[in-house]
Length: 438
Image 1 (cartoon, rainbow, N blue to C red):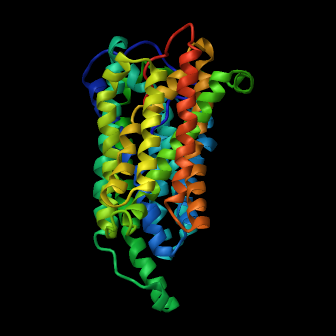
Image 2: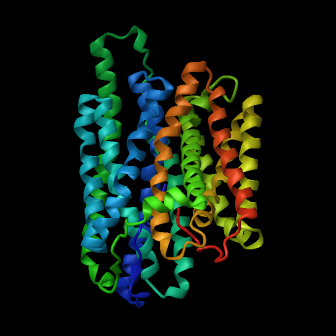
Image 3: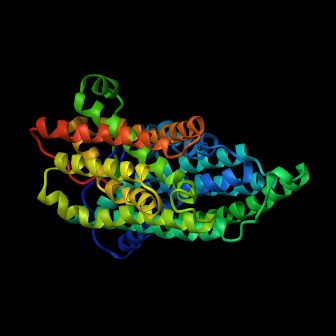
């Protein structure tokens, strides 16, 4: 999940087109591809760690809490760091943070420590937040200003493709060679040995991620001259609290970012277990995990066609329609069985595709100079990805039925639909602020 810029804008106009600039732009697209996959592979880690540590649903969803809480903790500080260090040093810092956190997976897997894994995910989330805060505006500055929208759209496509491919490949990596193990019959030594063996798969994957992040950091540093013209503005925190307390549009937008990210992550995180349920598809672990990629693939397809839809219809109407479709699919999944139940929930991914940029543009619409502060507020609301999946898991545990927990995303999408209706009846005099990268 990528975040918009937090209180910082690229200044200095569009960059000139030269070899170094094109190289850095290609590297930036590659980073979007990787970060999309690194973020959403957490959906599979929820199931992996549930199997390894015999966790209930709420405990398993602590994976997302550890990761997404970093958005609330580091978004605004990352904007301050960007204004002080500039783009290249901020990029390098972000890559090094992810690399260091990834290497920490090795001792965590050796100790088979769930708490250790959660700590690693928190610091990876922090590094990704730093990168995302800097990456969005730098895409606009690497080329002519008049083509910045196409570059953002292209980067968004890379992000979605990365998510789909890496989740599918991650399913094979994490579950392809999983041992059949019955913890109820195992001794303490056998259980620990099983966890260490399964954890080694995770540790090995993140070791290669660390090496890749270090290599990309070096490449960005080598081609740093391409960003000499780009300057990051000072972060303005003054007035942010007042804007949030007194602007209904920002309040509603922040609430919807919170609920959208939470609902999307909650479904993705628990989809494997849902598809394994006998009354749904009754799939084995590996097959169910691979179908999670189709959930994110639906979002990828929706984003590819979304530009045409948003040109034809008002954003508020699109948001309400997509939210209503998501609600209908979830209800169909909850009351249905078999193939209908499973694929109805997978198709919610398509409905998610346009929600983030639409909510973001509507939530910051017509704010002028206050847009950076509003962006910071809305990005901080991404912390919904930490809290709502945990609520989903808690409902599933309390009721003993994962279907019952689907009421949580339904409530989230109802709130989003209401915001779309509100936006239709409360248009801004200045119109939309343009596309926002997710």
